[in-house]
Length: 101
Image 1 (cartoon, one colour):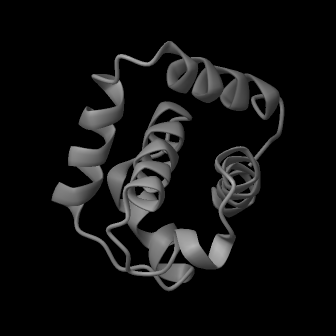
Image 2 (cartoon, rainbow, N blue to C red):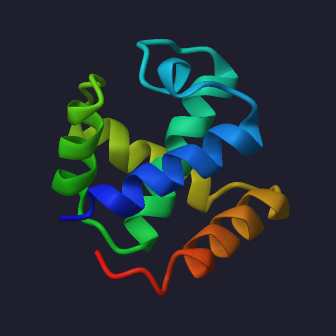
């Protein structure tokens, strides 16, 4: 149900961070990639999507993750001191807020 907005967030995030979608959904603990996934989790959660929806959408793209990992990522981003991260998330949510999913 939320697939369309999820895919838009993925494209926007990858462009902003400078990684490919393949990198985002590849098992990697590289800081840039894991941070991007955490931002994606937070964007989706604030949309609002629930943890199960986020997990399912990640799985559809070939990336299996746990509820705990998603919750950890959301918490990490919520405690992020960099205001640019929060601003990016807010702008992304507002940009696609009018889209019916």
